Image (tube, rainbow over all chains, first blue to last red; front, side):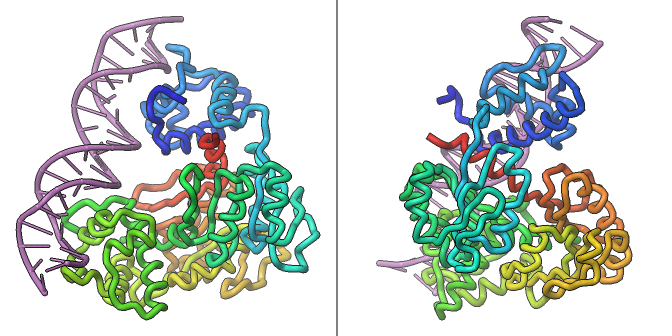
Length: 207
Length: 207
DNA sequence: GAATGTGAACACATTCACAGCT
DNA sequence: AGCTGTGAATGTGTTCACATTC
């Protein structure tokens, strides 16, 4: 797709730049230098320029980057330009509920449009825009709604099963909060967000 | 502290190995090879050996690693051996509540022992073992309880302020869920867990 | 003068491959 | 025979430094 190989870390940083640009834009600024972007994001300015250079030449020499122009370009690169993504959520426990009401997702162009949980008290209800279904309907609903992105927020023991069913229904990318390694066909993108592992590694750095 | 420089990624993986060992141990297995550990964790077996070799020689040639022995050693390295860490939580919204009831933390040896939130309906209550206080008492409680680890689960606008107050009260390491860069003195360890950024980067990999 | 874009140099992390031990 | 521990080789990502453009 692109000439050079793109570091995974670059993609992650593009999302950070986009958020910073949105903030800058609300302050009615029209230009920003790689220098300033770097300071705001806690990233080296050469890294900012290098990241952007993988995808094209968006800057104006001597002036920096047009805020509006760069925002549009980043949205295009990240496949967020004038489109919203529907997302399926598995697990409406504490974490799942937190994710359902998380503003950041909506603002970034994502909408959790359906959720799955075995609890009869939850099934049939709706939180935000998401109607809650029993897990056995994952295949049916996900494929009907043509959902490509899933979030796993179920206990570890159920994660593999739920993930497989989402994938068989057409999901191609997963955000996984369960503390297990998902074993899925290559071609499926999995991002693990492992809350305890992150916390566990903190004491090592103390003192 | 250690002769060689330890990759940050290694520390993160040690926490994964520890979790796998706990599972293995529940199955009453006594030895595990780097090979099998690798398969279970989705990590190359040479990587497993290299990670462990930074800290000593824990294996038995021809046999692999004693599950119990390696668990103890990893706990010592990660500063989790026969001790529990008290943690302060800022923000008892949906996410904060999810974190308070998250089993993984307890099991790993962490205990959220106090929480802070401005909502008068929440102040004075307790969730799990955490009593909820108003934010202006952060300095008082955190220093009295000698807490070294904090979790930030407040909206972005308040994160910097809350983080500074925790740090001034003695906190040395932070797990930050707010989508902002925290500006703190060097020596303070910050791990950012940015939920929307993780989700935002998924569509890039689709198709 | 100010800031981009980018090869080249560097730093960091992973994987190979095998000597050496049990 | 099986598996660790590790130097060497490779791969990946970051930073430098500067020619170039406005």
